[in-house]
Length: 353
Image 1: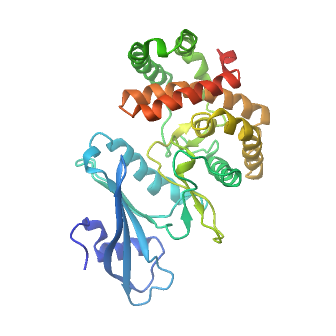
Image 2 (image 1 turned 45 degrees about the horizontal axis):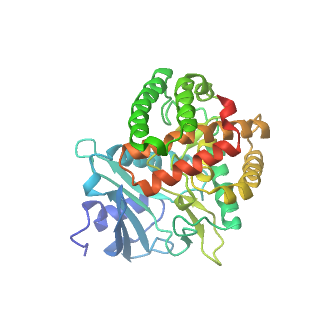
């Protein structure tokens, strides 16, 4: 019997139908659903469901992940739920297998902002590499970046970008976003006072002033892909020891069409302190480019990757300001600010201005 705390989407009959549509269940049927574990994140409520069947169920999943909105933020963060449902229901079916968890059902209700996703449960086979904010090992990081490159390659200059997959930001959209950012930045700078140096203030003003020129890289609509938008290493699931499987990416509430190096810059420049970043940065960029080539991407040189990476690192100094503007804790945005500026200095990104 279904637990009363579960939504109607996991009633046995509806689960049976979803699993059959997804090709995961043939003749049998779901008989019982129970909660194995549940937890809240900032955006969502995650429930691990245990399933029991009647009839033939060989190969059917014994558990699933149900993802629904966190009730406290359902309205304010509704667009994230909408985007993630869109990703799993529209994009995942067109992707190579083994890059993201399988999705068996998903829906977003525009009237109530209620949404749900029924996802493959990888709890027993996969794990996050480390507890935040400790970076993963070199071997784990190589596996993560290889999967990110394959994922980007799957959508690289895809003919459906901006048509049936995602939308293009116009020049006017970019200008409006920068105007909004400039207002946030002024308040941010006033708050920090002498904790934001004059050199950094000049860099921010130059970035704001030259944003239209810098945005031409995006508006060229060349060598773009679907980007994750929150591609830190803790949004990747790695196979547990002894498990022969692929790394999977999850949490797609910020995906968009963009320059792929934004994900790399966010992963390395934003989240790693200089020693770790300097030790791995070049190796990982080489690996990323090699993986693109192996995946069939042509016409994108190693030099072009370097230019795009430095360009993306420069844009990262905006992110701590955005985070501050939506009340992300200082523990996060202050450290991000320091790491991003360290990368900008190391890579000479000011030259781009």
